[in-house]
Image (cartoon, rainbow, N blue to C red; front, side, top):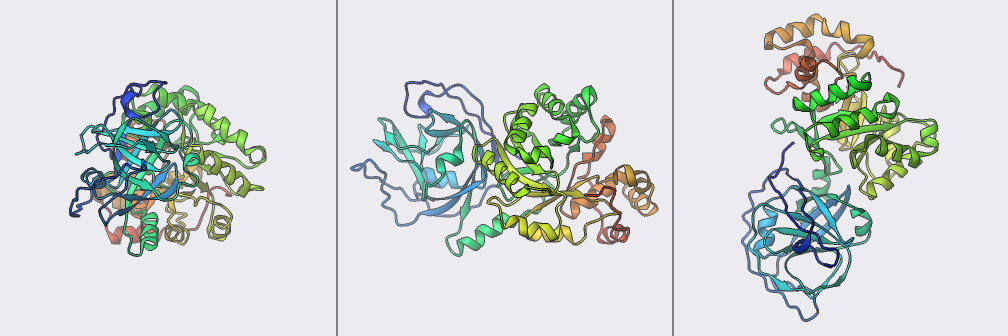
Length: 463
């Protein structure tokens, strides 16, 4: 994944009420999702401390959007030099550590141009730089003797503490143009186009997800562990599992066993209708316990079933706690999606369906895309029902020969060009590498159309 190179060092003290000066030695990771060529004139801003609150004298403030564990807040960014330097990093994703249950913080590798002020009283929603390079977001109010450089403030702090949850929080920052801000915000959420340089997509939850990974449906025991470790060594960063696969423990073991930092890996799992839908909070906690990797990047409902809306709302609670980052659905179609979205609070970020050249979902994919929902293909190579036939399909083989690629690579590349994330399964290291080596060629419009004509509307599974 794309990463803003940033390290933080800190030393913790349980007696300190204030942030970065006395934080525990840790390492956290920032993901820079792009830099804005911002030409806004920088202005020095002075603050009055008579009331203990920073009061901006400059007339202009930037409105920014902050997504905290999937929940969106608006903030006003001051016009001082440090705030403008911070803004130039946007859009920006940070994994922010917690201190004393009142703040989240992150250390950058580079210093900001700061002008410390004696703040005297912290208010929930304040955004500061401590010292030269420590970003601090407060979600409690209290008095302090420390000095900070104010960057801005969150406008409405309702639900802020709940959104941050306990422990580390995933926080993203982006600029909002106050002219027609609502429309621009919606455009940002709905921009789910793939970035073929970073090999990722930004979900409507604000999180970045790889667009090619590995499915684990048929992987078990040591084979599963070894396959995932090998996949991670070869550059795979997206792993799909599920309760019904019976291998969440093995997937978690492989992640812990690998040398890849947890925050670089995107893990999807699913809960299944029936017993799990009757006790969803236990099912969700079971998945967290089996994986044992700190948090789940995305959880899906495996397919529609009785009580599915309430189950999804239980998943939303775990998002609020920071234990799940994004939510989605599997085996959902046009006839179900609108009614479902109307009943939940967090829009699904992804729909995972059976998609392959013999079953192409040509109406479903654009419909979901228009809703700002990313599509993902399970059985992208046809699965048990169609894989052999697909990999020997004359049309696909002709295209593959032209590009010097395998039939599997052509099929997977076609999905990517259609805006569909792929998670083919394999335990063979050579095939795993082949299945993610999709970014050094491109299918022509004519080739894409030839594959589109192979559609038979033939599903393998009943979902």
